[in-house]
Length: 121
Length: 121
DNA sequence: TTGCATTAGATGCAAGTGCATGTAATGTAG
DNA sequence: CTACATTACATGCACTTGCATCTAATGCAA
Image (cartoon, rainbow over all chains, first blue to last red):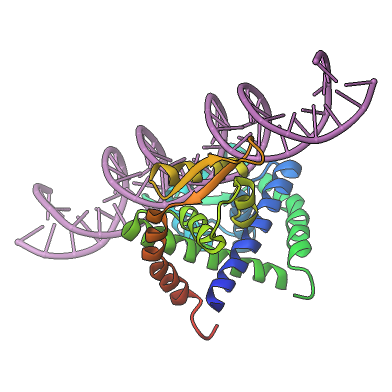
């Protein structure tokens, strides 16, 4: 029965955290968790990335990610360009505005995580 | 940075497990994870339950749960009756068919969990 | 080069979810 | 008893997601 308990724990933690992130990021920075996650990866990569590359990082389907990138582009946080080496691909690049938004939202994100994944436990 | 890693771990485990559950339960028993979860609680409670009561157990909004129950009822797995003590409430009751479906799906559910929350790690 | 399979990403569509709100039953104050 | 606040659940709506599919660009073989 221990595996069931482990699963329930993951379920509870996921729900609680995701819900808080959605609320906080949405209210304070007009960002969804998926949007922030992509922005976060882009900042850490610090280079253009392919859509598929981001799929592996974030747990989203290719179609969902395609739309997240579209929303981010619409908000001016990333730009989409043609990939020079493979013209089927899209080169996603974070903009200055995107970096600024990420820097602004990062403390909020970390605060939520800290609140829930507190020291002990 | 450890809290971030913990969150990523939850995220990964949640995505992997949820995805597998959706696939397996859907394909083999025509059940979604939410439907199974509610059925599972009903079996363990072994009595009628209020909708709100189930909300606390499963991590769903009241509206989502209302619809899950509606789907389960449509499938004949639970029945909805008026609550005698408070006629605003709904008394959700699992049916024999629901018990059978749960018994049938339980091994699948446990197998998925075992596969992912394996012994070590 | 031509033709076909494959891959990258976009998009139509159906499904599930949360929020805001609606309806009905209770509770409570006057 | 009347009027208003509250509670339980249902429902309209907007949004996100995954699946299937479409288009365009590659890769490969004849």
